Length: 244
Image (tube, rainbow, N blue to C red; front, side, top):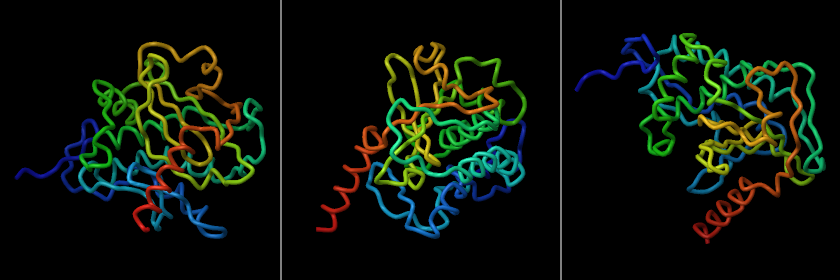
């Protein structure tokens, strides 16, 4: 059987590392003082064990994993520096004056890209088609993100008086936003919408695209009103039925 090779563009390394699909740092700072993070997936919702983060030993060498880690660390540190948004009504705005949207967008694309190249069962439905190689080239500096308007990241900020939504991690899943091909995930208190589609985002979403943003102004959305929260409830109910 041939040795697995690093999936980064222009890398032929065969000594591969434990590459996390979702960086474990999104959970580490938030699980210590007041309760567990919740890892939410199709099979149920449960407290996340440390270190959190599904991984794959067969996708990246340590050097290439480290290159993506620069983007990961920015997003981890940015999200970790923010307080929870509580009792903010849907449609009100969350603001941060300093924000590197280009780096944050690449961090979200890195999660999608790692999921798409993984052969682990939990990521089998995350496929990027022709954009797998395009996004790989963007992440490793061989292409420029602004040259691909079909790839856009938009953010919404979860708000809740009853839950610290920063502690919920929703794995990426594909949704249909009108006619658009969009992936949604929840990390660090944000709903992340990644459009991989030649058609533009709907008009009402375009102001919240962060690809080139240097400050952050995004709308709050009540956590309990989201499809992610409904999915969490159904997953938690499934857990209870299995334990009954």
